[in-house]
Image (cartoon, rainbow, N blue to C red; front, side):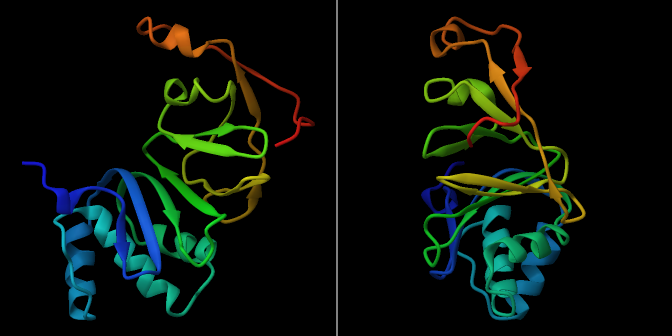
Length: 184
């Protein structure tokens, strides 16, 4: 049964907020470890486990990107994560493993979602993260890192669909590659 305490985002103190699509298979083990370290849980979700894990990592590694890179190495399962910190409100870190995550490219703004259709009202330019990718998203740019933590380039794709097309029901998604010289 849905409960408000299980609704996203989940926070750990005032350090980090997490939204998550997927299932963390080892959440029970991680929860037990975090409880043993003194973390208190207010929900039954695997997402809150991720928030507390990040807060714990950030005690030794305050950089949000590096903390997410360390945290995902401990997660087993499928996820599309979005992580924000009040300490750096103009920065969003996203990670993908086994669950889709698309970045919508705007002008002076960028967006994330699990599919193109959700973003068609605001953009037709997209970047698809590959398995294991982590990205740092800011208003004026995006940096992508592959599963090994190396900087990676992901092509910009242009959708030929419109928001009104997506409201008419399912149809094949058609995206074409766009020149990488376009602004991000």
